[in-house]
Image (cartoon, rainbow, N blue to C red; front, side, top):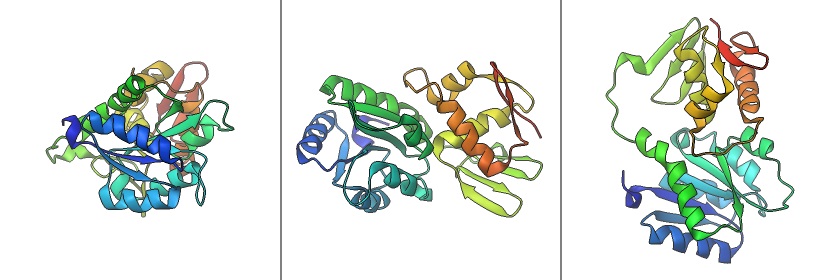
Length: 232
């Protein structure tokens, strides 16, 4: 997928920031949409289904954290990448952002070249995921009472279905790919976040905790100082 096929939604209550970001991304060939607050962002995202949402944290009506949580509940946006835009010194917890379902964060002010580079890195795996996929049985994995639908980012436990945020789903899929194998933290970082994305030390822990809340504590075991494994 080329740059001009990617859709990016920029969300910020400061008009000059929206104009700056829009100008630099449109110059690279991206299709850019904008919103001034979280409420408006949800409406625009549902209508246009962007590949990437860059979301300011501090906004009126609905802040970025709350907006991210709502966006992650929308099935059509399950594979959309969400990055928070945060000011240096802003009272913002990266852990709160990852718990809300964010994939990464960008610190402002940001230089144009850095912005474009970060956007390309964030969209790289989205572009790969957006390629046509042959529908085969391996798109669905069943282990005990847990069913994982790789096409829809959906899991089913018994009679209960839920859509997982992209990173939670990718983490679960990795662990389930080899039940009983211990995946080191380094393997998980590389496989789920990729070498071009910088995340905090507690990012994996936050995502593991969220998964345990949804599928139960008994399936994911911690090996202290090493990593995690999935047990049936």
